[in-house]
Image 1 (cartoon, rainbow, N blue to C red):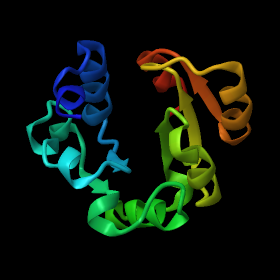
Image 2: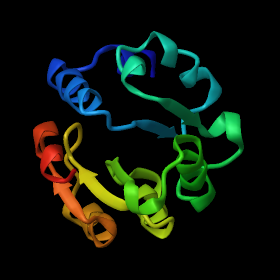
Image 3: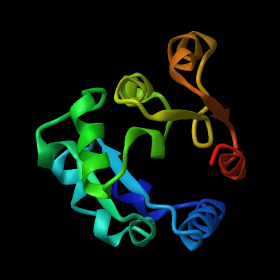
Length: 138
């Protein structure tokens, strides 16, 4: 996980900078364990996020609706104001959709099999393969 948090493609950092520059709040929701999340503050991603929720710290896992509600509470946002972006792992899009959020299925970092897509896409309002496509969803 440390390497994954350190080796961030420049295009992702550039997109996050653009998002932050228009005052959009960002919250990380991760099912990472305590060993993984200890590197978060050292990640080049960290400065772009208003807050980060790690399941090991809050006792909740995606797709439990409560972890999404906690994120919204921390950002002082309603579900209608939120857009959840994820690769579909841990049934996370289902959880976000159940909590009332709009959802984006991202294959930026990993392409899913057709069988995986059949499970994920019913809960996706949008699908993207490149970070710049995210701007069409905002």
